[in-house]
Image 1: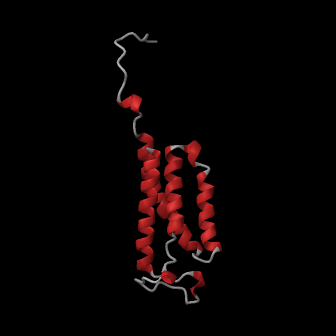
Image 2 (image 1 turned 135 degrees about the vertical axis):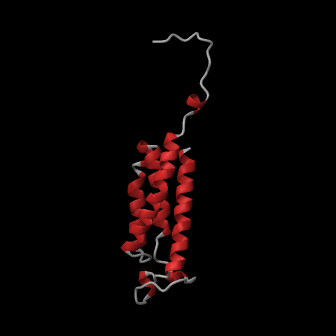
Length: 136
């Protein structure tokens, strides 16, 4: 169930970031343009705000950390590294990545909680042993 939570959180965070950045129209740092928000733009050089790479990586990492902390906690530094790499490559500003991380958290938390609270197969389908098990 954790895998489904990760997939859905990453997918919805990425779609949200993609829609937002087309609508915002913020030029990328390397676009050699005045920074600002120019409205709906389809050209890639205007797709800086919000970082979809950061949103999807934080969506996945957050859902996994909430659902399975022992496995998920090590993924948070990897998501942070993904955000840093986007800034280092000149694709995004810090604010783009911070909002992308927020979008990932927004979707990762509820999906992670849903996966964590889902009952196991043993809880859903208890085995009836005919009363032969000793009760303590």
